[in-house]
Image 1: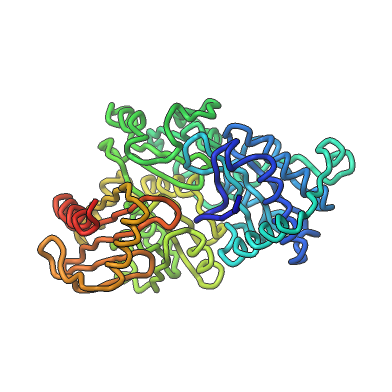
Image 2 (image 1 turned 45 degrees about the vertical axis):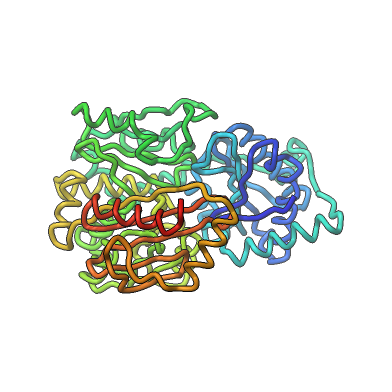
Length: 469
């Protein structure tokens, strides 16, 4: 089969695409890449989440790495992706591998490459690895391997606790004493994933739900979206808690519930934390966002005189900006957010702590903090919908949109276009609609932001009519 990396790593259904044989092929190609780049001599960090067979898959990666003569630090238990990324940077490793399918349904697993800077592999890197996989398959390249116990005996594989140094970094970055003193009633839902235990360890007394080991994730994908956080929302609505926080399966994405029990989207989180970093922490730098992310970030950047960068969808593009520019904060619509002074990586746990720090330092709830900003820059509502679409219909739609001629939608004249990633139409009142056909699935994604929920629905309806779905 053809191995292809997506927005962050290679993923597949366990026992169908994600098999030990295919994993060995990808791992050998990754080791060939690190060796060819002169990075392997610095060693590699390997970690895994709590999915079915993740531990064994991680051990298999370690066996192939050791077979190639590469020293490995293998996590002694499950670990969040940002903890593994931090270990790569803190240990001065040549790179790393994280076994996780992030927020995908439980039947999936995945393989993420981490580069020496402590972030997701850049597109240029994964492209080379894909080429090496294909070449190795064509040439019948031998998979070099060393049984795990022999590798450990020979000192090529060492177990370590990735959480310890990572927790120390979090404690340095946020004011835990201030948060503890504020005694904010908080409940955290790690969604049975690799972020379990971190918030209670850092902030004793915090309540955690869905923390037990459950490779089926309770029958829901470990993705912090409204439909998957009904338990969290109910607990906050019950009045016992003031903040609800949620993590995805490998804890690199964040979701939240505000003091009213309403879902607090990544757009709102981005807005609240960006203002917190600027006003309460006195930090400066550029701001990076993907094309599908809220316009509130644009307006705050303008308000504070910060340079704004926009990228295609995928945090890997933001990571590249963070490496090349002084970026204060970067984020994407799906809950992946990163900040200056850490690693160029999404980190749901750190961003959750920063939300609590903002509440502690301001004395206000999440909704109050958002309302304070919206009172200044305007009101915004947002929604995304994913629709099935046949491949032929998708290609016809792409051809139609590329040819131009869309001058109005939902009785609104189109005042601008942005085709950086998909087809984004801008309107005079600041609202917008993004039509984005998936490049790998028979799916059409529609995103819209406007001043009211009704206006958002009107634009989404117009998008569906244009697409014929």
